[in-house]
Length: 216
Ligand code: A5P
Image (tube, rainbow, N blue to C red; front, side):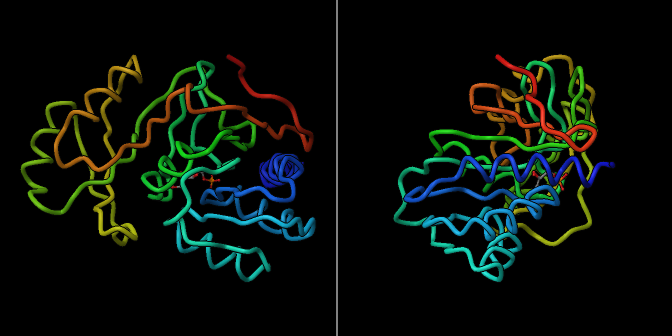
């Protein structure tokens, strides 16, 4: 049993929480790629909102009913992976650059369930913290962020919303303090720090079995 099995069992456990009639947010990443077939094999009468074009395409190919987010005020459930899950339940997300849409979808959901392999569990979060930046005035924005520490622009395509993807490399002690600072910077569209208040449940795959993650 390895990391891929751990991702798969966590995803399959989350798929069992999806029931007919729900509107469900689908995250982005390799762990979510195990969720999609698990949902397709159950075929409940569910509508899905995708956090990225990649997820939307994969979900539609698997036969899932993917709808536009516009016109949907509330989701019953959102399921997504994470890059790091701290014991405090703070998350780092955005390894795939999809954290802006992922945070909007998670925030719209009555329950946000995080699915991870156990190697994502950490005592404390560490950099990089993914960022999405508005292109307008980006050099001025980078100067402001630079006061927090080094920033690296990622050599990846723009986000689906035209944002520039970067990483803040500065070490930090308190994710809440850093999140507040980043929230206050004009030009930062979104960052990859997700607070514990957003997280309803963490499902961890370990040694090919499911166990609960850190609890509140
Ligand atoms: C996408 O931008 C990310 O937030 C992913 O959810 C996160 O990087 C986890 O991805 P994996 O499941 O591929 O590890």
